[in-house]
Image (cartoon, rainbow, N blue to C red; front, side):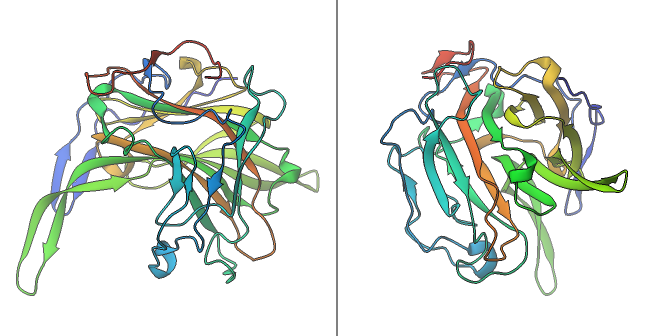
Length: 334
């Protein structure tokens, strides 16, 4: 199955405070997985001793400014708890569901009961973060001049097994940086200066309902974060559950390119969804990628159990700094 959406406009306006800059015409999209794989980062979950060690209580900085320290980490040092929203309540290695990558015996499952403050249900949609340790293992972010990209496999159980709630259920996202003009105001004066800005583009999996012949039917689609105005964009419908391959690439023009296909095969140009300058920003550096686990935080209903496998990070041009790796070929377990 292939999905094709229209390209974003060839030029967009970046508005930060009172400063506007015309963005250059975008380059051709680069298929995620192109170039050299960086085995120093990401994971294959094949080690039977793979384990996540939570350091509860988890962080809830986004709600009550509580940065619970220390944060949870995996025993292999490749994953850690998101400091802003905390880790999923359950993270563990599981047997790879049927139809996964050839040779895969292990994958990672994540789910949550309290996505807000543990023990204090809010009945409001919240999310937990599980972050790949990319930036620190590589001793810094990857410049987009190196055309970084990231791919992952995600197992979607039958929709009947999802959390019984419409709205976002899961996210596959990146943390990237740009330089933005920020306005500072005092009592009498204002000034602008360039500052580093971090933002988080990604693909969400969203559940919805519709009435067909008097019956309620559930369906799912992708939601793209974000368009140049900062708003989410509706992506293609998800016509089948089971394994999917998702990816994002980041090109030297600062654009983010989004891809998805059913199955576990490598992404191709036919799996292209869209290219965007999220929030009107030109991406300059790729920090890491992470997963969001979302639920209604009612203290009773667990989120959908999400299983992922074999996330990988690539550079199209190593630039000499992260040259250690392997050329991308077909999907095989390391």
